[in-house]
Each structure stands twice: as structure tokens, then as C-alpha cells.
Amino acid sequence: MSTIAAIGAATLAMLAAIGRITIFAGQTASHVLRPPFYFKEFAQQLLQIGYFSLPVVGLTTIFTGGALALQIYAGGARFNAEAVVPQIVAIGMVRELGPVLVGLMIAARVTSSIAAEIATMKVTEQLDALVTLSTHPMKYLTVPRVLAALIVVPLLTGVGDIIGILGGFLVATKTLGFNEAAYLQNTADFLQLSDILSSLAKGAVFGVIAALMGCYYGMNSGRGAQGVGAATKASVQAAAILILAANFILTGVFFSA
Amino acid sequence: MIRLTDVKKSFGSNHVLRGINLHVPKGESMVVIGGSGTGKSILIKSVLGLVTPDAGTIEVDGKDATKGDRDAFLARFGMLFQGGALFDSLPVWQNVSFRLMRGALKRPKEEAREIAIEKLRRVGLKPDVADRLPAELSGGMQKRVGLARAIAADPEIIFFDEPTTGLDPIMSGVINDLIREIVTEMGATTMTITHDMSSVRTIADKVAMLHDGVIQWTGPVGEMDSADDPYLNQFVRGSAEGPIESVR
Image 1: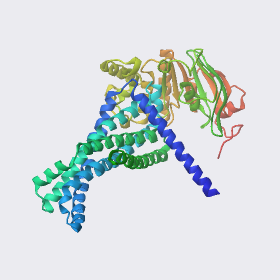
Image 2: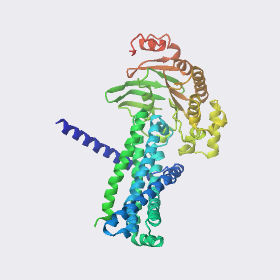
Image 3: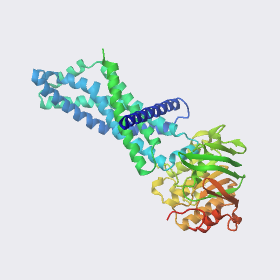
Image 4: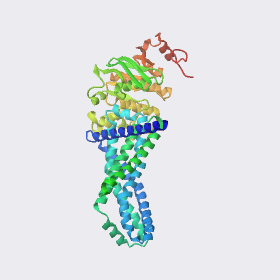
């Protein structure tokens, strides 16, 4: 009986958390549409989330693209299909690995940073100070971060896709003997516009999830250093799980049938 | 000016405020004293709407504090937080002029900076502090910056939450004197939360003693030492013996 009660309690807690996050997302959406707008904070977040994430996105995707080329070449050799490396690298990076890896890297780098920053602001009464200075924390902190992520994470995903394909290209042409011009031609011929658009759309959704989770857990953190640490950890866990779940759903929506 | 009537607030089974009745007339400096964890900060946060009371009414100038234009209501207040609550990412002058750079009180950037530097000078800080980040300042300087921010928009009502906590006795005296001077020259209505008796004697016109969720005693600061309230006497003497339980 106690096992059933524990499962029930965990289920209720999970549903309550989903409800709170949904309400938080709804509140964020309503604040996006109503002034005042903090353009300076928005511009700062474009830099923080977008520009400063370029190195980690570039390194992650170039190594993954290279490894993917090696794997496809080795696997394809089992049934004389080594020649499909350009096509599979392109489709694998653009449809799946690019957006997912960028989303997870953003969750690791940006979600954690947002959650820790806002949680520290809460613990040190800076959120209360914002309110007493007639500034709504959702408008000043959440809206600029979520909007910036909505805009720059798809761009980062596009950059990640290109760098990932470049990683595969370098490995294939420098170590596996592929012709450079033929590799690029195969890549360009095989990719469709819908592949690229689905990749960017996934990036937008993952960006919103990453920023929203950072803000939600930051604003709802517990007290003290332990509260900040717990909020940061929970935000990254939630963002990563939601990104992977959203990826599954979006893949179904874009590519089933 | 500020009237709290039967204000109650609980957090789960912890009944922090059990029915607060308190009146702060216009232009008066009210200091609320009481032990740690007695709900002093919750009291002023309730007035500002940072905490929603479970019961009771809070009126400012006879109007319900929970109703009406929230921005206009908050624009009447300045607040010095216990830890300063300065925004880490902004330089000192932008912290001080935060309210003057956005919203209804927005001024041109240069004017906001000039006002910030003037307010910093008023609390004894030199203009070169203006471009530093809060993390580069000592605790006493951060308190002064917080004080400058609290008075930047010339508010009618100022709240001070533990203004001398964490400061050495000399810096505490400096902050107390500054608060008294500024409050007198601005003619503001103030509520100060503290358990520092030197702050009480410097800042207060009136004193209210909060214990066990209610105001145990209230009266002019001059009557504090001669009052026959056992709770107040024990607190003022700093004695472990008396009706207030002390954990040793």
C-alpha cells in the first residue's frame, strides 16, 4: 500500500509541477505582449545566449559530425554502402543531432546560468528590490531571456548543422578518401528545405524550453546556497528532459507519414 | 499615514503575524524592534505587497494598499534592504538611479546619472564610486549605495530593513546618523526594522515591540526605558532572563 501511495504522491507532485510550469509559461507569454519592454536587457541576452555559446556549439557539432562520418563509413562497409556518408551525415546532423546537441548544450550552459543568476537574485532579495522599484521581475528578467533564446537558438542550430556537416566533410575527405566536390554536391542534393526548416523550428522550441526552465527554477528557488544549487540542478534536468521529449514529438510531427 | 489592522500571516503551521495593529502617522519615524525570526521583515514586506497577508487590512493614506495603481503606489516608497540587494550586473550609479531610468519617473540618462552622483554624495560616497560594480565595494559602502537608491526618487515613505546588520559599531553609527539626517531633511515617513538598540535610539520617534506575532508595546522612544512592559524591558536590557524565551 505504501508503494502505491508513494507512486501516487510522486505522480501528483509531477502533475503539480507541470501545472506550475504551464502557468509560468502562460504568464511569460502574456508579459511578452504587454509593455514595458526592456530592449537593453534583450540585447544583452542575445549576446549572452547566442554569441557566447558559439564556441561550445561549434566544438560539440564538429566532433559529432566527424564521428558520425566515421561510424557511417564503418557501418556502411558491412553492406558496401560506404558512399552514403555525405547524405547520412547531412540528414543526421540537420534533422536530429544538430538541434538536439545545440539544445542540450544550451541547457547545460544557458539554463544553468540563468537559474543560478536568478536564484541568487532571489536569495539576496534583488527580486524584491526590483518589485519595490516598480519593475516586474517577469518583464525584466524572464521576457528578455526567453525572447532572446527564441531568436538565437535557431541561428545557433543552423550554425551547428553547418559545422557538423563540415566535421563530416573534413573526416571523409581527409581520411576516408572522398572527393571534396562530390561530397559537397551529394550533401546539397540530398538535403531538402523541409529538413532545414524543421531543424530551425526545433531550435526555436528548444531555446524557449531552455530559457523558460532557467527562469522558472531560478524564481522558485529555495533559500541559501543549497537552494541556488538545487534550483540550478533541477533546471538543467528539466530542460534536458523536456528538450528530448519535445524532439521526439516534433520529429513525429515533421517526419511521420 | 500607514495603518495596519489585525494583519495575520502564516507559513504552514508557523503563525508569524497573529494580528498586527499599528499606526504610523505622516512624517514620523517608527522603529519596529523584536528578536530574530519574529516577523519584522514580513511586516514591512506585507505593506509593500511583497508578501500577501492572510487576513487584516493595510491602508496608506486611508486607501487599501492592495487596490489601485500598483506602480503609482510603489513610486511613493523607497526601501533599504538588509543585505543591500544591489543589482550585481549594474554599476553603482545605475543601481541608484534604477527607478529614474525606466517607468513613470524615467529621466534622460545624463540627468539620472547626475542625480545618482548627488545622492551618492549625500550618503558620503565620492563620485568615483559611481562606475564601480557593487561587488567591488565593502559592506558599509554597499549599505550607503542601498540608502542612496532608497532616497533617489525622493519618496514619501522609506522602509529600512536591518540597516546596520553586519556593520562594525562605527559604520553602524554613521549609517544611523545618515538615516536620521536624511529622514529629517526629506520629511519622509519611515519604518525601520532592527534589533540594534543604538539604531533605535538614533532613528526612532516611536518604537513598536513585536513579539509572538503581535505588537506587545508601542510608544515614544523617550518612554522606552521607563515602560513597565516585561517583554520590552527584557529586550532593551538584552537580558536572557524574562518572558522572552532564549535558546542557549
